[in-house]
Image 1 (tube, one colour):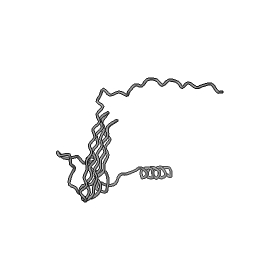
Image 2: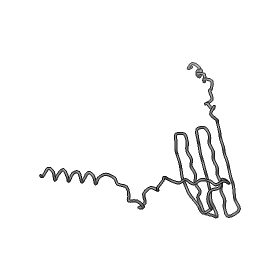
Image 3: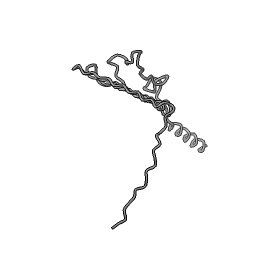
Image 4: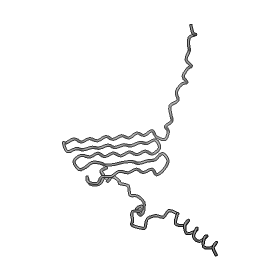
Length: 130
């Protein structure tokens, strides 16, 4: 009988030691995955008060990263993405003194890209010691 009580106590202690997630609605992960911000048809994100930061890495050699920080009077927005040999970047900023700027970069090496082949470097010729 003592063995049965000890075995039951040990099994109860082990089962309580396993991690358990929070109850539904208590700060657990969002239902249906994470919703990443997407630009609208004009390339802009949501309203000026919508500040965010995110990163998405769905596969090998593929990533998407971006943020919008600041406030409605002084802000900065940056977006980067890469898929194989294609790289895209966008940077925009705005301040309350009339400053505004945008930079767009799009590098595409294509599928036929290969690293350049350089000629072998000749061995250095040293003079004999005097």
